[in-house]
Amino acid sequence: MIDLDSPRVMGVINTTPDSFSDGGRYLATGAALVHARKLIDEGADLIDIGGESTRPGARPVPVEEELERTIPVIEAVRRHSDIPVSIDTSKPEVMRAAAAAGASLINDVWALRRPGALEAAVESGLPVCLMHMQGEPGSMQDNPSYDDVVAEVETFLLQRAQAAMDAGIARDKIILDPGFGFGKTLDQNLELFRALPRLRSHGFPLLVGISRKSMIGAITGRDVDQRLAGSLAFAVLAAQRGADVIRVHDVAETRDALAIVRAVEETAQPLQE
Ligand code: 8Y7
Picture 1 (spheres, protein in one colour):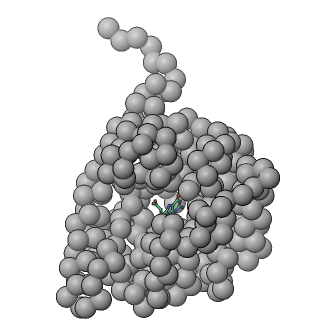
Picture 2 (picture 1 turned 120 degrees about the horizontal axis):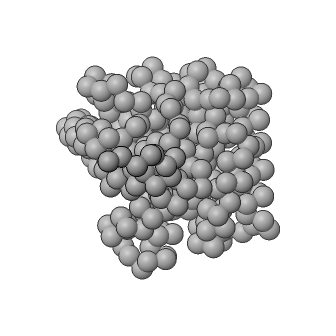
Picture 3 (picture 1 turned 45 degrees about the vertical axis):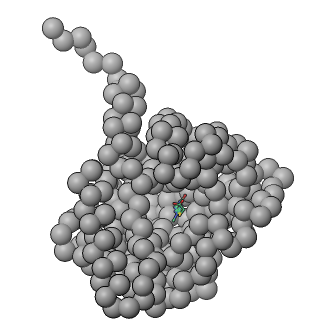
């Protein structure tokens, strides 16, 4: 696996949901590959490829379409780079195909709760990222509600980790993620963010994804294409609170921000003359 001594940067590749025709699909794969190359050149430690939008209100994507969007991109990335590829999926068929195509991590926003997903993940032998989500993407932001958001997310994540281990996934192949924006209000997201050190205390690495999310818009008033500064602030704060993997769209900028964190936190060196 990857060294997690200092936080790693996961770059997000979005596969575009445009045309269903072969030509459109071919062009979309090419565009995703160009984007992947850019993020790799910018220094991503791993890249996340997903074929199903999990944005609030997004429509479900049939399995064939998800396979067509993701597998050719994984294969193409595999041909030109050694970078670990994460497959963002909740579907067992996609997990299997992605593993066969050379993926290195399963990133499941459903935390392996969909039928057959746990079994497929075990069979793949791959590490998994288990994310918390309240409700489902179509309606999760309608009225998120918790008695104690931190305790509930923590309990859920530990239960899913236990289910994964009971099914045969090794403890050191499990990453947890509080799922910022997935069935959470701004206040609930912020409460969870402050609790990152507590969520980290169970020994599982933490993945944090906040890049460009609406919680940044809610704080800054910025549209999605104007959220880089907010995203970097959250990346720095997440690193300081123990995040191990930071999932971002802007890899070069995030790496610079994390290099500053690292330089400041490094054990003081003797002065050189
Ligand atoms: C996350 C994620 C998204 C996240 C993990 C977006 C696929 C929404 N967000 N996976 N995926 N954590 N593990 O705005 O926060 O990027 S999609």
